[in-house]
Image (cartoon, rainbow, N blue to C red):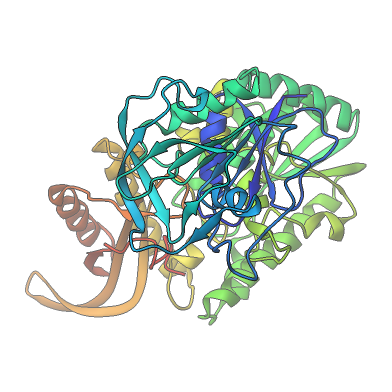
Length: 506
């Protein structure tokens, strides 16, 4: 069992980012609700308290008793976490005339403090808080300040406990990684969380968990399910059967390409051509949520039908990853977002659930895939929505509309690869709009469809900015789509960021 850091989540938008930064430092960590500390787990070596959207002075703010944690483990409070400890010990937290948002300059007061060891006297940090610590108890010692916030960082006497009012996890805090690394050193963790160690431990665990049982896995062609398949194949070989359903809403030639890729990986895959079933069910449907439900139900029905053809299946494997788990349940226990990989199928099919990637972030999954020797083109493939092109065709879905968006998308994606731009964006695709416009082709007036191109940069899809692709590239792609895709006479480029827009259009 790997040594771990526990991150107590008080609802901050950057809690997952803290986890990713700790993992980047080769240290395993788990994010748990603020009031669900795993007492009795001997692998825990330290605790980080996250930020929060609340003020500690709010009646409904998330608060918990830290008396059984502080003094037993090294503790690092970030933003709200730092304010909570000051507030709990009798300090004062409140509004001031000088609140800080964005960049600030940190001045280290105690250069010998182990948390700030190796930091320059002055460096840039990132602030994001409405309240500030106005006064701390006598046993709190100031170790760093900014221009407007005197108590930017503190150490509690007689405890390995620190508080930071800035965010070391964000990119704009120049020495943030060093601070987190210093904290891990204080915790005494071995920093042995690597792709190779994960693979070795997971394969052993899967062999123990599954024994000689048979397992089925629904493949999507994406990174998560593909890495899950290769891991399971390494552990149980022929006892794994994969099912890949073509719902008719995949990218151009994707069904054949993916099956070929899986054959090269040595996987036992059943390919199911179900295009006509989905086209029939989706005929005339325009509401995006209804489309999603029809596609989701159809996938489950066909997967279940194919699974029943197999004998002695005991387990259902899924490519669930850590953000799926975190985002599907809020810290109050209320579901805030449903994911196709969380729940549903196992109960319906009376199968036990196997999720070997459920503790990994997306970038870790890619590292695991590369360590397993999988093709880079498969590992670095852009995310693609479960409903496929069904949510990139606004309005009703027909085979003709699928053809149009497949061909436009293929030109766009192929162009990105040829121009060396594919790996510089997080996600890209073509959207068919329910808009027709007048055009001129030769001596003829046309009244045809509009394609929107969407390309974004991101690290985790929680936020995204539109990709600033070269005008020359966009002009070339637009011209090629209009000339080669019958039924399209206009191309536009989406320059909306997330938020307020989403990455997909539906």
